[in-house]
Amino acid sequence: MPTPRWRRGKRRAVSPIIATILLVAITVVLAAVLYILISGLGSTGSKPYQIGFGQGTPSQATVNTTATYLDSFSVSTTSGLTTSLFGFKIVTATGTPVAGGAPVTCNVNLAPIAGCGAPASGWYAILEGTNGAAVGIFNPVTTLWTTSAAGPVTVSSAYTVVIVSQTTLAGSGDTLSAFGTGSSSVSGQATM
Image (cartoon, rainbow, N blue to C red; front, side, top):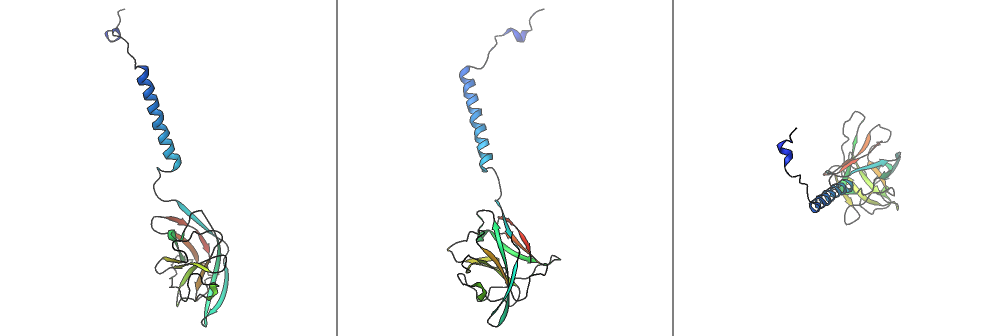
């Protein structure tokens, strides 16, 4: 049987030098892709943050002859969560938002925070430091923080979140929730 015409020509292979260059190039490309996947450079979106709340501790104070209700929550967070990344909202058991109010007679570095007055209506939140002073105040009307530092405050388990209101929210079944601002993703909630 005669050899087919296409098999009659010389057999040629890739030269060893070109084969080595191709193998090195493929290895470098695969290593770069693995590095990007492992380091997270290929991911889109923001890091999701979590804030956990302990059991609320209600108390009452009188500030300028006005009854002020305080509901304090210990917190635990994922690392890197700052006040510039999140805010708070409160909703009723039926899902209706509880309107916020602007902070009254409360300044950062004020100690004790029991001296912070209740808003005419609604609520606002204080981030309390270990020394009992306010290190951050969240205004739910503007959804902005005022902090004692030059920039955002990094939240840690050393802090306490205190909800200040003129009517008691504790035991109402309302839910305090954290939400991300801008493109950040923050979650966490507690029953009042």
